Image (cartoon, rainbow, N blue to C red; front, side):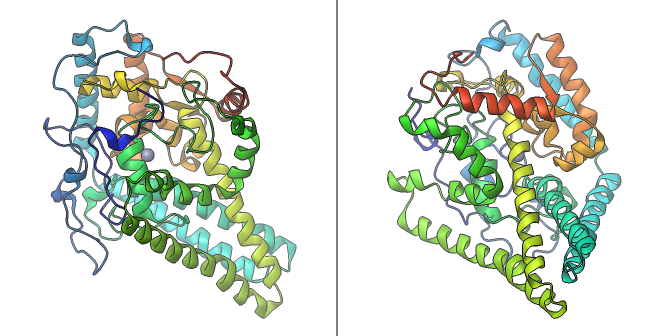
Length: 434
Ligand SMILES: [Zn+2]
């Protein structure tokens, strides 16, 4: 098992971008296929051209969890657990999920609609204020509102809608197969690398490319190269341009280079990215500044939209890096997923993720990714429900002697940066726990 082995080698077919990446991979409930969603969650009315293919999601996410037994190797943090205990953890977490599903309804629908309305008010208000941004107060107000709008759209709305968390509403406008987010990478491309690959293979070195995004060395098991000396520098550059980093990452250039991704698939993905980039540029760097020229505020408005995108990128980068990189979150070898059961899958999600503690406002601004542990257990539950599930998950970890990683934002960000500096050097100091 080498760190360079690829996720496609074990039977996950290369789902080409453009196929429906909708729906999160979640452990199968019927013992057969992955993908929590069913055709019953399809939007009530499908807008023309919105859903790119009718191929069922399950086809590209074969269920690969064993119904009993244990993985070849259980991760060190869970090595003290018996098979029966792990199975019981699986049952407890299933029950937790079922309890939320039984309650899910009108109040949840009202919540996401309220968030979308708030986001639109902020975005329209922000752009309107930027039209007169020669005035300093208008510039600050416009840039602030637009920054919040972009953060809300990406984190609490976009990421979660694209996971299919709201598909049960069957609203074609708030659906994983139709939502196009305010981020340069096309929704469909991101759904493939994030929902299909990262959530399935969370923190498995060699299968989850989110460990460092092919750019940073984030685990001692990744072989050191002299280029890694630049780790901290690359990360500092990545932060303000995060959406571009993700867009390039989503192209899966490595797969193309090594022949696992076809030329046609590559062309299609480049075209989709090109179209999306033009759309984003037009909206932020042409239309808004052009309209602002009427009041002589064109240059200031351009600076405002550039700033709002940078603020959103730096924030998203910080929050997302806190999800799996702080010290104490485990990474896994391929032996640890070989023969993995549903309970083991749940355990891996818990010990491979880290939470951010803080106020309700903090949770909202992170799109509830501050509850990364709960998000990874239940990627398709509505985000507004993670807060009520969290104490129960934490209690479960305590009872079974499993680590539950949480801390304030600054501590988690600091820990992540510490690791980035440490792994810039050969070896990386501390050996991995796994
Ligand atoms: Zn996610």
